[in-house]
Amino acid sequence: MIDPFGRAITYLRVSVTDRCDFRCVYCMAEDMVFLPKSDLLTLEELDRLCAAFIAQGVTRLRLTGGEPLVRRDVMWLINRLGARLGHGLEELTLTTNGSQLARFAPELAKAGIRRINVSIDTLDAEKFGRITRWGRLDQVMQGLQAARAAGLAVKINAVALKGVNEDEFDEMIAWCGREGFDLCLIETMPMGEVGASREAQYLPLSAVRARLAQRWTLLPSTHQTGGPARYVQVAQTGRLLGFITPLTHNFCEGCNRVRLTCTGTLFMCLGQDDAADLRAPLRAGGDGAALQRAISQAIARKPKGHDFVIGRESRPAVARHMSVTGG
Image (cartoon, rainbow, N blue to C red; front, side, top):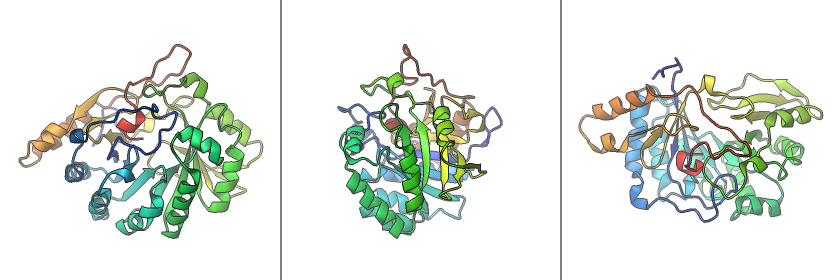
């Protein structure tokens, strides 16, 4: 699949649910109203949609949410997708808040997942509770131990929040070095109303990187995972440090991703509202030609880039929350 700007689309992020057992301050409102369960695609339908994308050249799949592991019977889907590894699919990964990892880590590894992203924005238990509203850091730490015991490579994702965790990044780098984890810092993205000021939350990673370079030796790295992060290697720990910078350094020129929601809506860009309904052609049945056409037509509309802006008068670039799109 080639978009209008010559980019090969090989990476599909799939939100299996909009629900989550956390309410992170940069992602959701505390009183979130989730989609009716009747609006969600069945796991069988998600499997068929993923198969259609693999047939058109997608080689990497990442399952997201919400929190993907709170979806009932989600391991059925993960096992089905894992069986496609080596048959068009090269990699199956997962982004999780870690709350359910103690239970699921061995099954994830058995299904063929080799690496996961776990969202942890602070190592302070009390602050973790404030950021996630409902989360418990000790539960996530138990999940990380289970993931490591299962042989899963772990990357920690941390959203950089001004005045909240900006004084913790040195500690997080050192902790990840001790634990054998990579770390990726992410700028907050203006998606959906979350009951907080985006400008108050926003911390430019250009400034963060410059400060970190005063303490750590950041070596150039060509490492890539298929996502938008740009990596350096921390010489003192030997681990990778990534930066996802949708605002200070737009990464759209190399975008190879599209996002599928749990309702069958395909977003060709995280920061644009244009979308394609794949549920109707999926449920139309037949030989699948209508679904393949719908996917091809959607890729032909993929925009050049997003419109993320954060400022005093700015509103969210898109009204939908990250959890709906697939975080």
